[in-house]
Length: 443
Image 1 (spheres, rainbow, N blue to C red):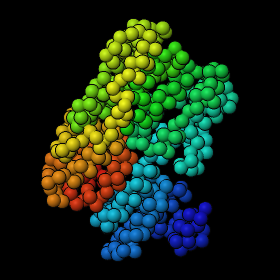
Image 2 (cartoon, helix red, strand yellow):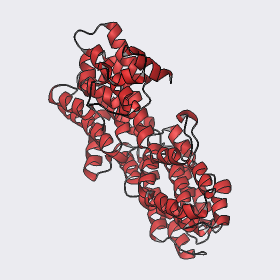
Image 3 (spheres, rainbow, N blue to C red):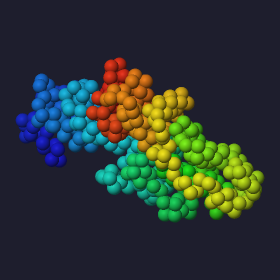
Image 4 (cartoon, rainbow, N blue to C red):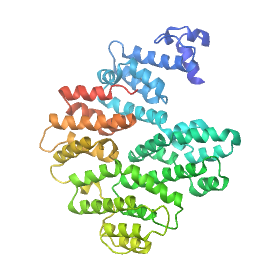
């Protein structure tokens, strides 16, 4: 309400009627919506601040107005008022653009994340830092009258693909608040659905298991930590798991096998040590054996034997498989860290990796941390003095464009993490124009 009062007074009026008819909301065609008129008033403020010469006070005010925004609709209007990213770059010092990029990424996440959309639909979402979670949504739906549940469950299941996609990208970007919002407690939530058996309960339980497997697998994959992932493979043939859980594990691994798993494997193949490559090759062989031989029912000695064989051992029981996993040479190494997979000529390796991933269509699905490291390596190529080559600049733009195509928020997350001053100083000519166009304005 104070926000409303501020803009009403700033228009020179004391009533909403006067505010609606003022120049403060003349930035766009008139609207009967108070929310739209406040957004237009904020855009008008940015336009006025950026008109003519901008001193330090005006620059700081533009930055502060944008950083305080918590709404994608009004922030995009403000960006349009200043002519997008190019206008920000013209009007503000480079250091001001980093906090703005952070805010753009945050409001796009809040707008586009399917989990947040469902939370806003079913619950009161007041604080993204301490959001309710997806499990809370499922619990709330069980309280609806039965006659209204069926259509809603159908609606929710129709969004399954997009829901899992955005949970995957949030996890691969290590957006901890978003990952926490996707949590579904197996006992408290899934257990209720197994007992209550609502409309399409089998599909709903399967979806909930897939959500949990997605966040779990990606939390290891983003860190290139393969040892715990072997245990995920073992769960596909574990009689202690329900058939629904095992099938959800299989479905999740098959989906991530299309891009996320091979993107990580390609990163290690191009830039990793021989030991790291052995770790990943052995894991990918076991993963493919588990996917190809997945058993709908247990026991399944043939399927277990195929996985054990992929690990270079013999046996056809779950005990044999767990022993093989425990005895893997990878067990002592743990995670394959970024620092130990790159050696000399890291800028050349980064360009090679970006090119190969881009050709395969896997670049967008690479973990955010590795994308950022590659951009930073290219921005600080050894042997060069504050200058990058066209090839390096094109590689940076490939990473930025891939991020934008898959998830706009990641583009601005990358820009902020790499630092606009570093990007501005090292990307030049046509490549700079391309970079600015990529960043110019979210949709």
